[in-house]
Image 1 (cartoon, rainbow, N blue to C red):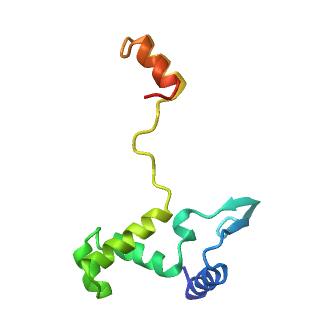
Image 2: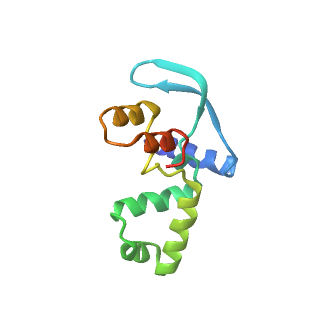
Amino acid sequence: MTTTKKQDWHALTELTQGRPIVVERVRLEDRGVAIEGAFELPKLAQLAAEDQVFVAAFVRSHGSIKEMEQVFGVSYPTVKARLNRIAAMLELVEVDPKPSRSETLERLKRGEITAEDAIAELEGKR
């Protein structure tokens, strides 16, 4: 990303002040192709520029809070509080997704679960 593009991104995040943005055109520079529609920015891109820098630093430090304390000159509780605030703004990936209807029926067919368990899963009770 060139300096101009970085400056443009920072200017855009300052202009929007955290309000939702919908991108209506995406252009692939190396292919000369443009796609039009309504595209929502990823949650990380919706963070304020300072929070994006903080997340990038956290990733670069391999999640070391001790290193984050040194880089930003703040205490452990301050780093944790900021991480918690940022995490609350992000949609986290579901780590235990509900099985699909077909998965449940396949497991029932193979005898891995009882009919009672399958009904409970299909009704969303498990």
